[in-house]
Figure 1 (cartoon, rainbow, N blue to C red):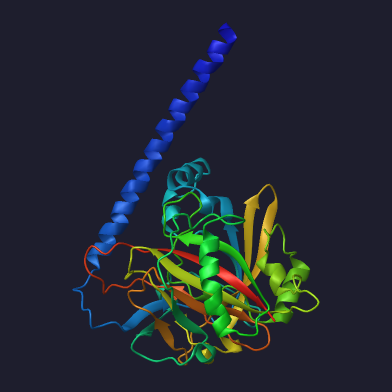
Figure 2 (figure 1 turned 90 degrees about the vertical axis):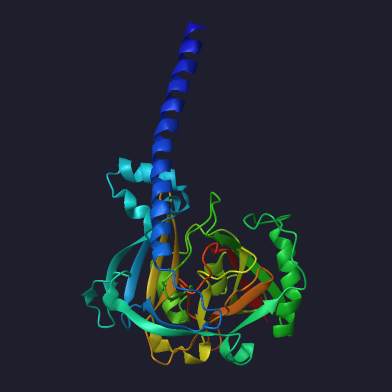
Length: 373
C-alpha cells in the first residue's frame, strides 16, 4: 500500500511539473501570437471596398527548373504550439521556429544539376504580381481556365470538418457537391474523395495556412512521377492514397483515373477577407514553369510518405485570380492534376492588406476529388 501511495504521489509530481512546463511554453505561444497580430495590425491600410484587385503583391517563386527536396516532420507540424516549443527546447533548437513554415529544405538543384540555395523568405526571390478579382474580371468557363466558384444551395449543418471515413459529417458536403461536379463532368463514372484538412484553426490536427508559397500539389509529368517512386516508394499512405491514385493503382477495368480536383472553402468567418486562395489560370501555366518538389513526410517510427509535387517559377504570362469575400457557402474548384493534357492551376494563399479593421482570420477546409472515366 505504501509503495502504491508513493507511485501515486510521484505521478502527481510529474503531472504537476509537466503542466507547469507546458504552461510556460503556452505563455510563449500567446506572446508570439500577440506579436504577430501587432505586426499585422501595423500593416493595415485604410479599407477601400472598391479596390479588390491586388497589385504589386510580393510573391516568392522558385528558380526555373529547380529540384527541391523538402523534409517535413509531420508530428512536429501537427503538435499544439506549447508541445512543439517544448520539443524544440529539448532539442536545443530555436523556439521561434514555430512561426515559420513547417518544413526544412534539403538539397536544391537548378535545371543544370548545380546545387543552389533557396530561401522562400528571401526578398530576392520575390516578384511583384497582380491578383485579379475573378468576380469582376472574366476568366471564361471552368474548362477554359481550370477553376470556378460553385454556390451551395444552403449552408450545411456541419460542425466537424476534420473527421473522415464512414459516418463523418464531411460526407454531407460530399453529397452536396457531387451533383455540381456531375454538371461539370457529365461522363464521370466514379468520384473518389480523399482526405480533408482544416487550415488556420486551433484543432489538434489543424495545419497552418499555406501563405506565400506558390505550388502545385502534384507534379504534372507522369514519367517524372514513375522515376520518383522507383527511388522512393509511396510509403505509409492512408487510403484512399492520392499517390497510388495518380499512379493508376486504383483504376478498374472500366474506370480510369483522369483528373484530380482541388476543393477549397472557408468555414469561418461567414465571409473571408484575409488569406484567401489565389490560383493561376491553367491556360497561362506551361511545363517549363514547374520544377521538381520532392516531399518527404516523416511520421515517426521510421515511417514516411513520399510525394512528388511541383515548385513554380515566375512567368509574366501567368494570370492570377481570387474571389474576394468568399463565403462559407461558396466552394472554389480547381485542377490539381490532369492526366491527358498539361492543365493545372498553381495556387497560393496570400495576405490581403485591404480588409476592414478587426477582420477575423480565415479558417478553411480543403480536400481533393479524383475523377474516373
